[in-house]
Image 1: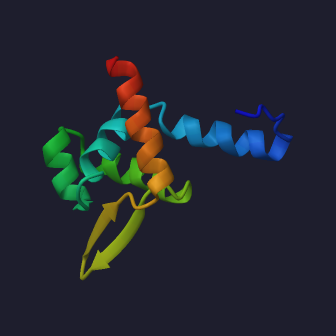
Image 2: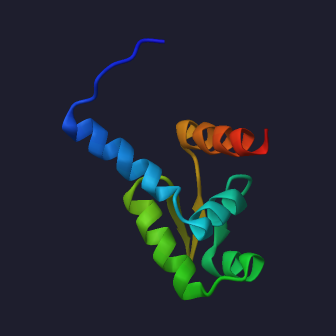
Length: 98
């Protein structure tokens, strides 16, 4: 593997990406939507986190382009579709489980 020195801009984006994984609630939310899309109410009930907190985390994850939103009437459903994010998440889980 080639080791490259990142420029400041790229390094800042990589650090921001990893910061997205630094909160246990966000990690739990991501684990819940990896397999299927869900709305805030469903995530709140499933994870025992307030809807307000779930919405707050989803806003940040959307801004980082880690999750995508799909509106169906009044409901917004969230999912992770980027295979890079899915693989990064799964590698992190495998790493801590070894």
